[in-house]
Every structure is written in structure tokens, then in C-alpha cells.
Image (cartoon, rainbow, N blue to C red; front, side, top):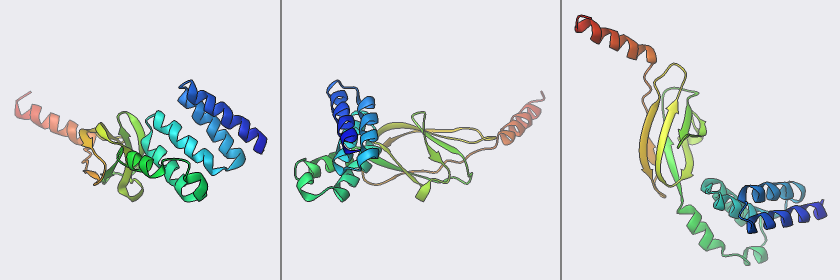
Length: 176
């Protein structure tokens, strides 16, 4: 397995050099599955960073920090990278009274309600948050999410039947 893992890591390194970050990540994942070498956690973090998947990159780098031996950690600018990654990861604190609603950030699913701990980590920046549930109007809000304090989002989901009843009531009031 070790020789296979080494070959896969080499293929991942070559893909990084070609700027094919998804293929690099795939090769690093395969190499880690075979070897569980903590050095590959660092490589995965760098590939995820290059793919702008910062919460996952931070997870991998923090895992590298926990699992790698001191001599290996000393070969990389770990403290600098952790600070950089943490500065690019924000948290959305989201609560709604509708269980099983899908939460999307910039059109990508990040979880279903209730979210674990009512929170989800995302890339910092200007984002569109959507909460979608069967039988409810879609909640949509644009927010700036920064590192540090969580961005609190409290969506109120309105049943579609409530909207229809209100439309009928307004039409009746107009005499239609």
C-alpha cells in the first residue's frame, strides 16, 4: 500500500503543478486512503484551498496540525496558513422552525435544517443564502459573511397555501 500511496501522491503533486486541483485532490484522497500518512492531509488542504473550498481546507489543515509529528509540521508555515485559512472561513448561524429544509449558499447545498449546532462554516464574502422546503416559499437573503463572529440568519418560511389565501383575500377586497 505504501508504494501505491507514494505513486498516487506523486500523481497528485503533478496535477497541482498543472493547476488541475480537482485531480490533485482526487489523487491525494486515494493516497491517504491507502496510507493514512498525515503529510497528505497538508496536500489535501492546499488542493482544497486552490479549489476555494476554504472550510474543508481549514478542516484538513487543523487535522494535519493535530496528527502530524512536530518535525513534519516544522517543514511548513503552519501558523501562517492556519491564520490565513481561518480568515477566509465564516460561520452562518441559522435557525428556522421548519425541519428538513435545504440550506444553500450561492446555490450550493450546505445542509438541512436543523443544521448541526445550528451553524455551518462557509467561505467569507458576499453570499446568497437560500432556505428551501417543500410547501413553503423559498427564503432568500444576500449577506456579507466575515471571519470571527457568526452571521445570524433567522429565516421565516411562509407556507405556500398562506400566500395563496392572502392573494385570494386581496382579490376579493378589490371586488375581483
